[in-house]
Image 1 (spheres, rainbow, N blue to C red):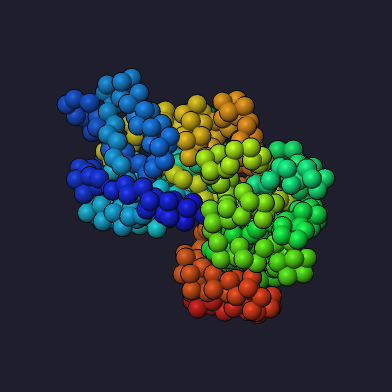
Image 2: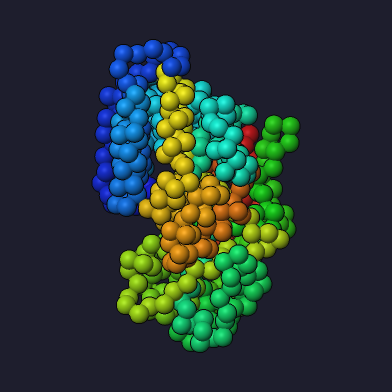
Length: 430
C-alpha cells in the first residue's frame, strides 16, 4: 500500500515537517470571509521525490503568478510523521487549508469532522474525470472528504530476454495474463538456478487482500452495521496460488518471501528471477538501477474473475475549519487539471486517477517504461471492503500478517490460515 512505501522511503529523505505548528488557525469554520489583501491558503504537501517535489513547487508558483488574489503557501510535510502532526493541528484548530495524505488514513479525520465535504465545491466536469470506485475510497458516511489523484497498482516486471528465450510472449497493455497463464509461464521460466517469479512478501497482507479482489475475495463482510472476517473459497484463491507456486510447482523463490520489492532487484538483475509481481512504482528503480543493456518490460495486472484491485490513492483534502473552502477548491481543480495531474503522476511513478490525465501521460511518455500499462491499470482499481473497516489496521498487524507469513513459510495449512484470520477478526471487530 502507499503508506508502507512512502513511510519507508520518506525516512531516507530526512525531510522534516515544517511549519505545521505555525499554520494559522482558520477560525470558526466560516467560508470566504472578507479580507483585506489576497486570500492566503496553506498547502501541506507530502511530495518527496526530486521530480515530484519540483512539479509540486512549480505548480504552486505558477498558480500564485496567475492568481494574485489567492496566494498559496507551500508547506513541506513528511510521510513518517504527518499523521501525528495532523492530529495535533486538527485538535488545536491550526490545521492547513489543504492537506495531502492518502484515502486509507483520512477516514478517522473525516469521521471526527476535521475535513470538509468537497462534493459541492468541485465542478461536475472535474468530478467526472475520476471513476466512482475511486471517489468511493475517499467517501465516509456519505461525505467526500478527499480528492483522489495518484494510484498505485500491482503489475508484473519481467526480464525480457528470459521471456524471449522461453518463448513467452509479452501480453498487450490492455489484456494481461490470467492467473493460470501467469503460473504456467512462471513454470516455463523456471530452470536450475532460475525461478519464474519472486513474490516479495515481507508485508503480505495488503498484497494478498488487494489481489483477492481478482476472485471477488472480500475478507471483511458487513451486515447491519457489524463487520466480520470471513474466509471462503474466494478469499483462499490468491494465497493458495502463491503457495502452490512456492511448494508444488516450485516456480517461485522461497527466499524472496522475507524480502521487500527492492530487496529482490539484485537477484532479478542477475537472472535469478524472471518476473517480479509488485508495485507499478518499481519501474522507477528499473530505470535508475538496471545494469546497462538489461531489458525489462511491464506486464499488466494478472486477471482472475476480473483484474480488480484495491485502490488506496493519495488524496488532497480541505480542512473543515478553513475560511476559504471555495478558493481552496479552485486551487485543487487547477493543481489537478489533466496536464498537471499527469506531471505529478510522472514525478511519483504512479497512476493518475483522471481519465484525461492518463491519456496525456501516455502521450507525454510515449507509453515507454511501462507507462501504457500503468495508465491502463487505473480502470481496475476500486474501493475494497477492508479499507472501510475500522479494525483493519489492528487485524492486519496482530493477526493477518503473522498468519500469512506462517502460511507462506509452509508452517500452517490453508485451513489453519483461514481459522487464524477469522479468529483475529472476532478479537478486533467486537
